[in-house]
Length: 112
Length: 112
Image 1 (spheres, rainbow over the protein chains, first blue to last red):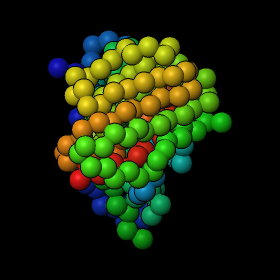
Image 2 (cartoon, each protein chain N blue to C red):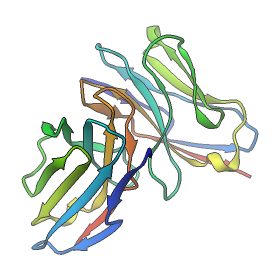
Image 3 (cartoon, rainbow over the protein chains, first blue to last red):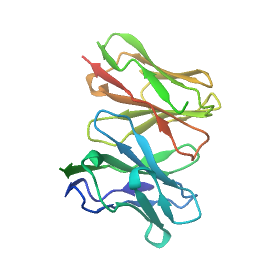
Image 4 (spheres, one colour):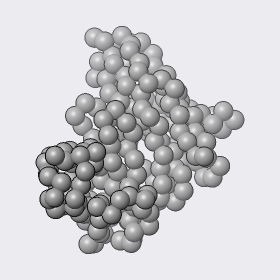
């Protein structure tokens, strides 16, 4: 079955720490991968996306993600987190023409 | 304009009521989506309209009835809902299938 797995459900970091959130997908078709962020009380926003080309993609707010085809992974990274990065992060994958599968989400809390 | 708007923001309804949720986008997107999101869970796809036609119905109960009056508008008609239908209902749009989705802020629905 097609699925998206996020292994870290809750992450707590201090400001300036580095962040890496794991995401693995299983889908044999065209790979379109996304990371969305949901800040408290706000709507889902796109952080970055991968469709093809350079496997290292850069998004907004200093986030980046690396697509590793051999590992079916699309991990999100940020070198130095800020308190304002406290949010829930969802990895998503295209699963058909109009279908997207979301991972279960990772709640990140950054301590000031 | 890269915004998806949803009304109302909050809705409380009884199990015998009929109400509608509205969604609007002016980005020229040809695909529009309804998702249901329970607390601390990822969004779950309910319906997809592409080019104003219903493309996907994820086996949603008939008490939820979608409608796409034109390419910019998406409605979700609600009737005889159950308390377990209480959730955040998200609308999204995308240029085409497989592209990044733009999400609205959602309607928080409470069914008494």
